[in-house]
Amino acid sequence: MDNKIIELQKIATDIRLGAVEAVFNGKSGHPGGALSSADILACLYFSEMNVDPKNPTDPDRDRFVLSKGHSCPGLYAALACKGYFDKKELKSFRHLGSVMQGHPDMKAICGVDMSAGSLGQGFSAACGMALAAKINGKDYRTYVLVGDGESQEGQIWEATMFAAHYKLDNLCLIIDNNGLQIDGKVADVMNTMPYDTKFAAFGWNVISVDGHNIEEILSAFDAAKTVKGKPTVIIAKTVKGKGVSFMEDQAGWHGKAPNAEQYEQAVKELEDYKNELK
Image (cartoon, rainbow, N blue to C red; front, top):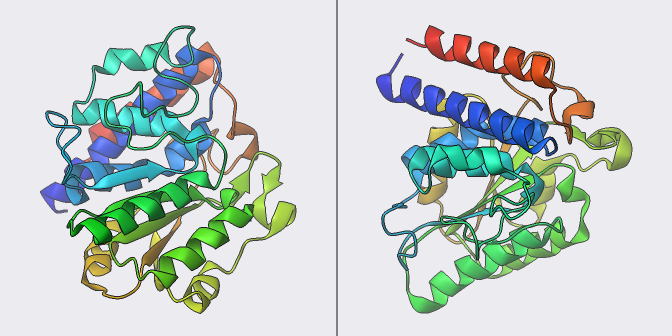
């Protein structure tokens, strides 16, 4: 296997380890969606995006918005792995006085481009960033990650219409399609499928990938950059809780912290997987 792919798989595993560390120490949080999106975050921060932790406010940097802000343990872990702050900060997640809040705060955490919390709003902010780049003649790209449960919000579809209308070909939306939300299966709570025909009807370029296949994710990002005159959505089929056996595809792990025994098992499984990568 290509060395770059292996390295990104290892980084994704480190992101998962960091997310588990944060939620365990915070005694609360949302591990399921953080784990499902780890491969996407690894590809974004360590291959795709033009970002530099030594110059985090560079006006020409690419932007990333975690619209499903409750999955921030994954984002925090990715930022720590990239070098925006020390990994030990992850242990302060959700502690009183810590900047590692339960949702990202752009005013407090280095590397966070947009605060997020209320579902749907991050996508609209990302559209604004992409339109600003067009108006100001800037070449940076904007990436935004939304959840499939989050896609039940009407604001998601308003932003979808907005991005197509303004031909935001510098915007790339990624849907973390793990099929679960806090109350169970997305299809049972309020079905948001099919994404491909819906986004195509709004005038978007549509790409579908296995959200845990690094090569497919990277190829999708490359393809998105070649498309002109319309935004791109990458529909990433993922597994909630990916990488930790007892969390995988379990809605109950949407927003729950592991106990000490579960934490140890999760860490062992992830470290064993990382050691097997060659």
